[in-house]
Amino acid sequence: MQTRLFSQNLQANECLEIKELLLQGEVIAFPTETVYGLGVDWKNEEAIEKLFVLKKRPKQQPMTLHISSMTFVEQVAVGIPPSFYKLAKQFWPGPLTIVLPKSPMVSSKISEKVTVGVRMPAHPCLLYLIEALGGALLGTSANLSGHTALCRADDVLAQFEGKIAAFIDGGEIAGKKASTVLSLAVLPPRILREGPVSKEAIEQLLGTCIL
Image (cartoon, rainbow, N blue to C red; front, side, top):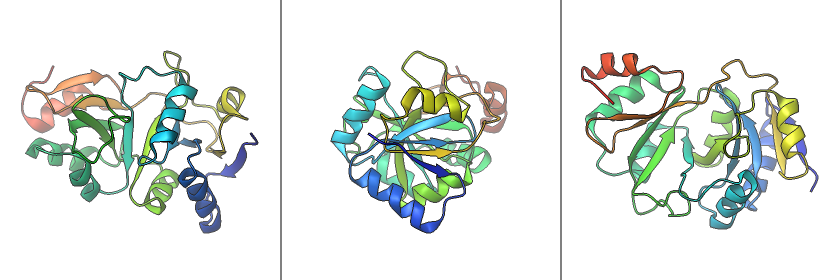
């Protein structure tokens, strides 16, 4: 497979090209404000399977829905607590993934659990692409499962060129740390992965202790 290369300064026609590749079930790589990611059309179950295989990721480890607007969350999650809206208002767009009870429209291929992780990234190129896709892109960090997340374009190409349909080159990413993952599907809320948004900042905003 030839990997098509794009600049992060996507033009409208280029965005449409990438959108078409995703709708055809292909995998792409893209920059975020934290690390590079791999993504597919979240409604395409064959593409989701392909992404798990490419990343060598266990099926028990869900991937994240990257979204472009708050309204989309209410389509993919149920029982959304008031704390979610506080967190999203403060930290989105940004490096915080929030885990919520999932709605029936979220395929078990995305998450075998009763929950789904959602995040609104802060990278303008990615938000532009997500918006063109209709509001969501299923994503995961661009690395083999268990390996360090990649922050340099050359490293992503060295690992995935010829295995993905498109690569959006964002140069070297300054964040270098995957997003914080916080579950609101349990009480008290629990940090599942430490990242740029600190436990202390979340506790201060919510006015409560979290695990």
